[in-house]
Amino acid sequence: MKTVAGIDLGTQSMKVVIYDYESKEIIEKASCPMELISDNDGTREQKTEWFDKGLEVCFGKLSPENKKTIEAIGVSGQQHGFVPLDKDGKALYNIKLWNDTSTTEECAIITKEAGGDKEVVANLGNLMLPGFTAPKILWLKRHKADAFANLKYIMLPHDYLNWKLTGSYVMEYGDASGTALFDSKNRCWSKKICSIIDPKLIDLLPELIEPSSPAGKVSSQAAQAYGIPEGIPVSAGGGDNMMGAVGTGTVADGFLTMSMGTSGTLYGYSDKAISDPENGLSGFCSSTGGWLPLLCTMNCTVATEFVRGLFQMDVKELDGEASKAPCGSEGVLVIPFFNGERTPNLPNGRASITGLTAANTSRANIARASLESAVFAMRGGLDAFRKLGFQPKEIRLIGGGSKSPVWRQIAADIMNLPIRVPLLDEAAALGAAVQALWCLKNQSGTCDIASLCAEHIKLDETKSANPIEENVKAYDKAYAQYSKVVETLTPLYK
Image (cartoon, rainbow, N blue to C red; front, side, top):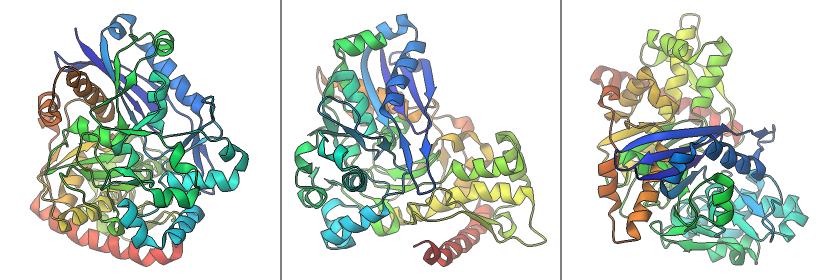
């Protein structure tokens, strides 16, 4: 048996899968929940010791026999998080996460010093948003001066796990392009943006490596701690969306992946650098070469979880209620900005249920509206893709939303595209494992990632959903109303 392992460090949990690349199946997996520090000012943080514990717990649950067969490891991690370490590798402060919105003031400072939004986009391919890493670094400098003075290593969550496994301090293009410190078009650190934050910053950033390159090899310390083979390659890894692209086969033009988890994302592979930051389409690099333009919303299953809690329903009950309501929920709309929002850029945004009348106020309509709201946010990203000349063929759906038949059909109807679901779940962890396999094969020759994904990423045809013309027309009208309400509310949260 020949295997590779994939690690996925998400916001809510860490997962590890062992993938048998000869039989093309996940033979074992383990997980560990992650805690979260939250505050009303938008703070969302975690601790490095929680990441350390996650590695110990996950690998500790896997059988020693299976771990011995691992030939390479890949790591996927939640994007944008800032892991600040001193010269000894000790954390100087908590890890500020992708959904931390406490850095709006720092975004404004950097943007002003850069010369405005257009200059920021010219340097990065992206706007300066609270979710990105750069404002988190400036926040540390402004609010934790002693910690910043001792800053030696700047890592993203997946880089931290790579470092724990190998001792190497490197970063690949995909996750780097989500830091707001990186020129995604030219694949280099932006000296201008770095110098605005601090003159020493650019010298602290890690060496950049190609996505096909190994980040390093498993150290003797990591091998002993986790029971894995010493000296095997650890691939470059990447952000969870970049690894999700690999795990869904979105490594060639025309395919889109939509992830419906805590956050919602829509992204597609492109052979050229494209972005539309004004309409929420970030200009990221892929972790396979090429680019990965991406839209991200901060509230997806957040909205459905809130409605479930409100009505004390489990997931099946929510789906059952939603299926009783018509497309468009008779005018009921959920505006799902429970965590503020990134697209549109409203870090101080608030959620609401609107459009209620004496005739349409029901559990069924509110339940369905919570499912619809997440996809309405993605619809804007799809429109932006098309304006840039991207011709989508189908959407590969992953995340919690992919498990719901009613949500899959809603997505097909709102997006007016076929929905396909990968046969194997845990797309980010599987993507990390496949990237590890790519890295392994490149050690002895040249391997094509698109061909590798075509071989290893299969679709579950029983979960396919195709758009229904009548539903598409109804959702075009509902989406127009949703967009109008969001546009009306936007000035309240600026």
